[in-house]
Image (cartoon, each protein chain N blue to C red):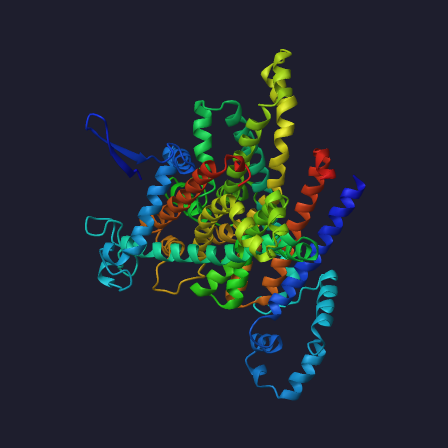
Amino acid sequence: MTAFIIRRLLHGLVVLILVTILIFFAMRLLPGDPLLIYLAQRSQALQDLPPEVIEQLRHEYGLDKPLPVQYINWLSGIFRGDLGDSYFYRQSVGNLLRERFPITVYLGILALIISIIVGISAGMLAAIRRGKWLDNVVTPLTYLGVTIPIFWLGILMIYIFGLKLQILPIAGFTSPFVDFSLSTRQLIMPVICESIFGIASNARQMRSSMLEVIRQDYIRTAWSKGLGERVVIFKHAIKNSLIPVITLIGMGVSFIFGGSVLVETVFAIPGVGRLFVSGIFNHDYLVVQGITMVMAVVVLLVNLIVDISYGWLDPRIRYG
Amino acid sequence: MVKKIETSVGYNGSVIDFYKVPPRFTEWHRFRRVFLSRKIVLFGMVILVLLIFTAAFANFLAPYDPYIPDMSNSLLPPTAKHLLGTDIFGRDTLSRLIYGSRTALAVGFISVAIASVIGISLGIVAGYYGGIADILIMRAIDTLMPFPMIVLALLVAGLLGGGIHNVIVALSIATIPPYTRVTHGLALSIKENDYILAQRSMGSGHLRIMLRHILPNAFPPIIVLITMMLGSLILAEAGLSFLGIGIEPPGAAWGAMVNDGYKYLQDSPVLSFAPGLAIMLVVFAFNMVGDGLRDALDPRLRGLL
């Protein structure tokens, strides 16, 4: 077990380093001189600086050093929490992220919890009532859930619940510490949008792995011992059916981050998803770089945890 | 087809024809029977045929010009003249929807072609050679994995500067990992077969073995993956164009149409609803056809792809 965890951690570390290298060099592949872009964004007048001054600045920012040295400097800056400054918002990227990342994470965690609970129960029910009306309702819905464009679902819900029925606020975000009930009502639609894909894919996976498990000999043994349905399903079937579903949770985090880009745009929620989109359009590269970095690292860490817990749940995997 | 191979005359003068009869039940029959056995797969197939037909003949099918503004007919509700109404510039929504199918299909097919060729080649090379090639390629793919697909695509498209070409490049890069991972696993198991050893002993080169033996044997899962990826790509393209990255105005893309309609949701909800429904229908069709192909080609893939 320890060897397995160490191997996974090492692998995670290697990929983490590769991810930072990729992000760093992707930003350096930008057409144009990063210093000139930066200066042009800061102020129009600075563009006409004499070449000697530009050379001086280049030296000050360390941009005259070879790329590997620049990469090390950039990385050590990140460890000190220095992600550079946003020229558009006139504040440090670190501050922007501290302000907005919690909002995205709050929504994301709610969506993740809902997608796990609802998805797994729906899939389980569909499997144990295979072919009955419940299965015939749930299974087609899971097919729709993975095909629906979430931004469109958001707009559809805004139209129905916000504009026509007027029972939910159409957009915006309020901190739950300021006004809990308003905050929760504003969150209902965005959280549904962000979790719909996860619900559907968890339900599909759960249904098919549960159908696989209830065919096994040990389940037949449990039935023939005269155990009740509740005991057979909850004590024997669920645990083993859950294993393939757990791997999906790692991917689920990635989908939720991806979804947050669209959902936060539709519902005007000031999280990092929306910040990312505005960063792309404003050419606010350091903001884009910072957000990409944080998202990738979180997804990587969650997958690492999932991988390790997977090995713990299913001992066969450790020796694979 | 039944082919006559010989004719002879019987003892009583009757003519007897001899036919070469093809086998009653071929692999193709089995494939066709399983593939067409589910109505929903058939439905998906019909939608895809209609979609390709619509994209191919958009200029004949569209009742109006999708690009020329006509401010006097701005935001008309659906009527017999404009089945889905008109947008803020007075352009017919149905015509723009029909032209939008071209964007969706073009982006989908071209990105899938680029990503699958690169991804499959990398996967086969990594799986077949193993060793350092395997480590380098698979670590590179692992590096792309933690990025949410739409974030990676936005990043690449944003850095390259938008436009439909850059969206295709961005989506291709973002979708390489699944192809590589699937083919890598397949190549690892296929190369252990005796027929690969036999090829080696007969002196076949590595390239020949990879192209003539590993690739065809890996084909069934790959074709299923490609079909499913077409759906995801159309969904991702819709997301990007919804955010404003992709085809330049006045070009028509379904995601961008949803966004344009969003501003007039109160007055004319059909502007947003219709293109979204089109996206959903097409993605659903690709997924169903992918499902049907999987069951018909290799039912063991159920739950894996």
